Length: 65
Image 1 (cartoon, helix red, strand yellow):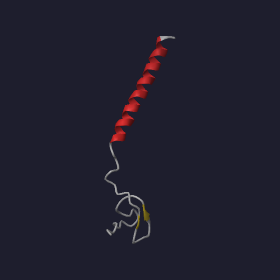
Image 2 (cartoon, rainbow, N blue to C red):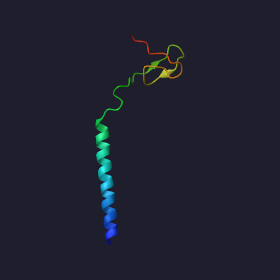
Image 3 (tube, rainbow, N blue to C red):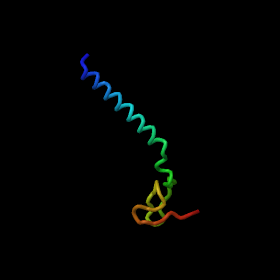
Image 4 (tube, helix red, strand yellow):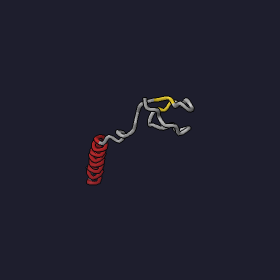
């Protein structure tokens, strides 16, 4: 095997290694921990809101129970 083939294999292995490190480190952060994921129906326009506290269509806020 030539040296360029070895170099290509090393570059591919390093790419796989670094992508695994990045995937693992980004998984530890809970990106959506501050978003309310309770589903609710907007009292003004009857839109079924799946994420958040505000309706995206009419801007109404979620009513607290």
